[in-house]
Image (spheres, rainbow, N blue to C red):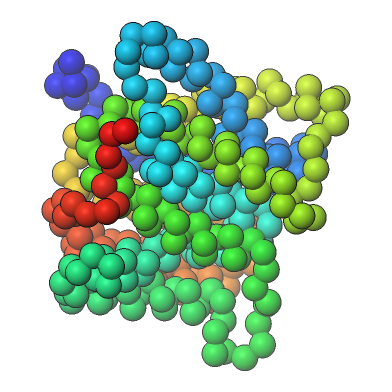
Amino acid sequence: NPMLNKRIISPELMVAVSAGVWGLFWIPLRAFDRMGLDPGWVVISQFSAPFLLLAPLAVVRLRRGQRTGLEHFRTGLLVGGAVVLYSESVLLTDVVRALILFYVMPAWGTLAEVYLMGRRFTLWRGLALVLSLGGLVAILGIGSGPGRPVNLGDGLALLSGIVFTFGAMRIRRSPDISVFEQVLAFFFYGTLVAGGLSLLPLAALGHPPDLPRFLAVTPWVLLMSGGILIPAMWGLYWGSRFVDPGRLGILLQIEAVVGIGSAALLAGEPFGLPEALGSAMVIGAGLVEVFGNRGPLPANKWDERPP
């Protein structure tokens, strides 16, 4: 009973904790990288293992005539693929740079809603756009003389935010999809995208691990999947169903705050004025977007349709 669950567990707390966990996701990614997995295969492990753990439940649902979530391939590819791109970026560039470039999302959301969907350009949306693009300029050093060149990780982080923007739009229009369906689609289609990236001739993504290394990391991958990734994603999707959009938007900003703050303190990477300014701008843009994007989005071609 959803109402009973709501009384037992605070949806707001569930969303806040889950968002905080995802903000720290860069830490285990870097840990598996240090354990000898190449970047491409670190990410494959973080998506394929949760899917394999959930697969038996999907089989049970199929036998009962229920949906598994694999039907929602557009949403799964967009959301799962976006997080895959972000995860790869964390291993290929500075963590703070990856986080800031990913969280430029309010800019892409504003542009998509105004120019592709015909929504009104408001003061809130304009402010979110300016702050987001300001964060982008600050972290990339555009117009400030010679800076650090943009690398593959930076490009993947920026692309991940764009892709996630469209995935988030589909989620907002698909409230009737069960939590299990959302979680399974996320990990399954994320696995497909991660596997596809590993086939590209990109030396930075590396090669499959040898058998001894695979056996050494497997218990940790399974522990990460069952103990952290699946509960965090489940909590995020479940809690979001019971929290009003405005409050939800604010709670989701915890992910950005925790991610950027932890990276600044723990990653041991440069964190100067450009990083501080970029962080403040993208977090501010996310909060402003909450006030500029109230209410459900109108139905259009991005809707999730049952087959």
